[in-house]
Length: 34
Image (cartoon, rainbow, N blue to C red; front, side, top):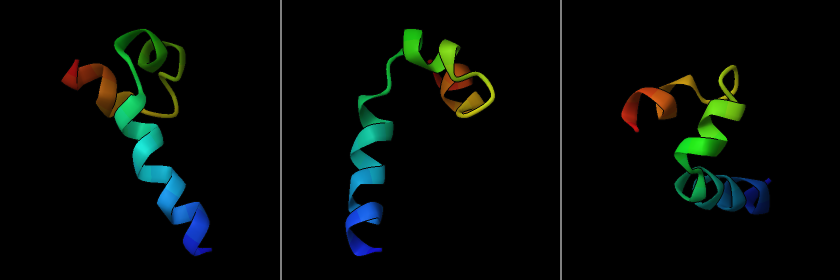
């Protein structure tokens, strides 16, 4: 569980505006931030 939690933060940080658009349902907040 600890490993999964550690891999979650970096993934969100690496998310780009283009990727955020692709994952509109997954990370809608990222789309608004970008």
